[in-house]
Amino acid sequence: MNKIIFSLFMLVASCNLTYSQGIKVTSNQAIPLPPAETGYSPVLSPAGDYILITGNDLKGLRKYDLSTGKLSTLTTDKGAGFNVQISDDGKLVAYRSQQYKNKLRYTSLKALDMTTGKQNDVVKESRNLEQFMIKDGTVIALENGTLKTKRITGKALQSVPAISSISKGKLYLTRHKQTSLISKENDNYNYLWTSISPDGKKLLYYVIEKGKAYVSNLDGSNPVSLGVLRAPKWMGNNWIIGMEDYDNGTVITSSRIIAVAANGAGRTALTDKSVIATNPSGSADASKIVYNTADGKIYLMNIEITK
Image (cartoon, rainbow, N blue to C red; front, side, top):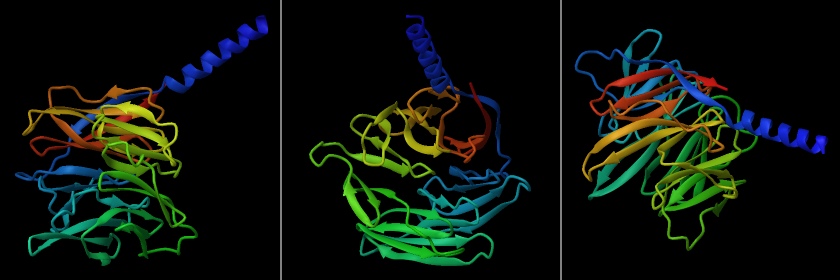
């Protein structure tokens, strides 16, 4: 009996260790942008050494160097600020460029070598660019269900990692050059904001009708609810950050930055309701988060993972 009680105690203790992690904010300061400058939808480089910001209409990309405070323009293309991607080493940036022809919108995919300043075309004027990512200097894109890759720097990939995408509201996974439907065909749900964890093991997505974000296995099994968490993003492999926002049908009336452990535990509000905080992005080591306020100020938050 004593052995059973001890085993149960150890199991409970183990669970507490697993689920007791939290996040503590150690500092939270506005980035000193030049006078009259504003920024939206910031993306923090994985190393946390620079920030990409865009306009409130997602037009253009500017780089803010955290060590020098220098702000430089990378592109003025329309749509460039939507879901921009940065390579793990911070040397490659992939972004959209939108054009209109005969009242139809076309999207190109471009990659910018941050070291040389050279711009590369990856996908040209597509009507259905579904998703893209960067892996070891190679840009991977899904266009109308077709996988495309283009090596910009470094060695050729030994294998193409899995990439998740959304087409007509449904959730898909492309792995080993085969695309599979992850959401159930007749579930009547629509999906948004999907991505795969940096280690390639977990799938993140948002279900519109449920108003919640989820983490699951790559095949969609064992989904874990993260609660209300819009525009969710990975911060390392163990944390998800996003926003808990509310609106009046026209504008956002309140929004907080929220962090949740990938196992669904440790939900923490990192900002309060005194400011409308949106569009968070975190560093790979889960030590920094950037976000913007409704009036276009960019904030850098330093955090610590607690136990």
